[in-house]
Length: 121
Image (tube, rainbow, N blue to C red; front, side, top):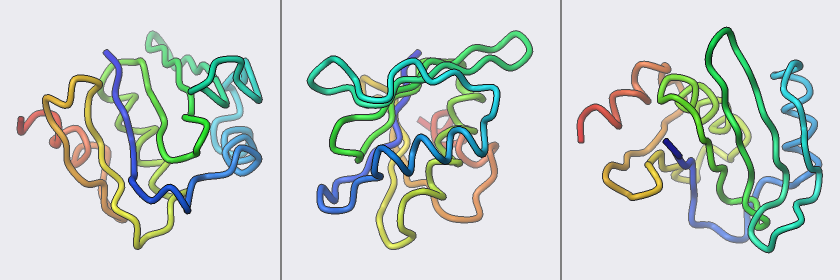
């Protein structure tokens, strides 16, 4: 399933270089497939494998959203990590690609708290 971590402030997007540096620092086994996407909406594209779980992620070119194609628990981990790249005063929303649920990711939340956003729908 595809999950999103998104915010609306187009003036405050996470810069490509900052996202790449954070991925390399915090997810050293992630493979960065593209550093500047070839599609109009995609920018940085990466994959990550942990045990039997796989994630494919990419950022929107404006830096205000990451798309996470993975099991929920792994998407929640990445969404929570992304919260640390987004200024605290900006509301970061976790949802699925069909917007069947959504909720804000706050600083200090746990992975289980983020998972609960989906489970409470």
